[in-house]
Amino acid sequence: MKKPTVLLIAFTLSACNLAQKHSSPSIALPTHWQNLTDETNTKLNADWWQAFGSTELNTLIRTALRNNYDLSAAQQRIQQAKAQSQIAAAPLLPAVSATGSITDTRYDDDNGQKKGGLIDVAYEVDLWGANRAARDKGLANLNNEQFSRAALSLSIMAQVAQNYFTVLALIEQQRIIKNFIENLNETLIIAQARLRAGAINQIEVAQQESELANAKASLELLKQQRITTENALAILLAKSPQLIIQQPDAYATLAIPDPKAEQPASLLERRPDIRASEMAIIAAETDVTRAKAAFYPSLKLSLEPLFTSAPPASFVMTMAASLAQPLFQGGRLEGQLSQSQAITLELIENYKQNLITALREVEDAAATKRHSQARLANLNDAVDAAARAYELSDQRYRVGLIDYQTLLNTQRSWLTSENNRVQAKLTVLTALVQLYKALGGGWEGEITESSKH
Image (tube, rainbow, N blue to C red; front, side):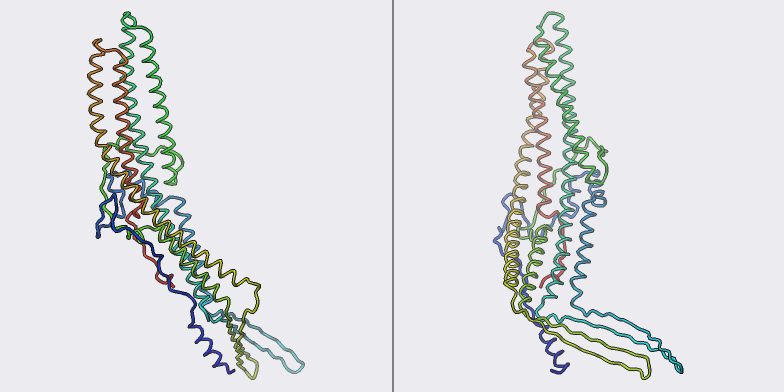
């Protein structure tokens, strides 16, 4: 067979491709949210945390995005994937190497020097798309890492916001318990005076002392929880464990936004973790293509131009082609194909599970936000009523119209109502953070189209 004919057949066959065009897995999605108002053209703000109205939170999140070590490590994984993608695409181009030589020949009557050079060009014709599949896998893995970093970024922003809100809630609870302790101290002074006057017995004083000691113990627990939570917040900012909140009294001023969302199908584009799941499927599909290509012959071409400088100067070109066909592999090729197909099907099922889990995360967060916000409104009324009851009881206790147990009951009721209100607002804020995260946090990522095959 003539060499031009070999080349013609090789390049004709290289147009063959065993890969199938990727299509996203099909799954039935609801048209509307159950617990959230959806609007077709509404998009979340990429800086969603600004809706809470806290300049300190804005600073904390920007610091975390800039300094967080996990995000920095994820960026290096992207660089690794870029390098691996470049390596995977290399077989699509010829490999060229060069060697040179100088030979010095000496005779009695003549001296001569001969220079020569050899260029070796090797190329494997991508007959069945195996090399293209390797390139596509590299691109899919690169996209996977990029989407995974975006998902990690969203998770870190959510953790910063949640820890920040928790710290402020703990500080607010400390303020409440300190006020409770102050009231207990005042009533204890009154009780001790009455004991000295013989108006009450030692039991009532002991009750008040016990209540005061328990309140102080609760305060110490709140202090401990604040420290550990704020330490966790510092770590997210790539700082050593420390207290970093500069505006400790900001809890009452935090806004409660009311986000709108696009329809459920938008999660396919707005959730970076779901996009990453699809990239894993694409990468697995390329393995199927390569496993299929392994059943077919491979064609390698080599070209060796030889240059010499010795008279007479010469140029010689050698061209070779080799064709290899697997005949018997003991079931290895069949096993590789079956394995790669099963892995692809597994990843498709994982993708579907991830998607319906994402839907649940949105609905859960939206329902929690809605009902906790209604609960918060009721607790505002409860706190006002409990405060009035305590004021009346305190006045009557001071003039001896009621006993200490009645006063203590109203004190405890007020304390419980205030703590419940703090917790309810924290639940609303946390649910909002989870809702923004579940909706993709306003993230808009572009997919590299060349990774689709």
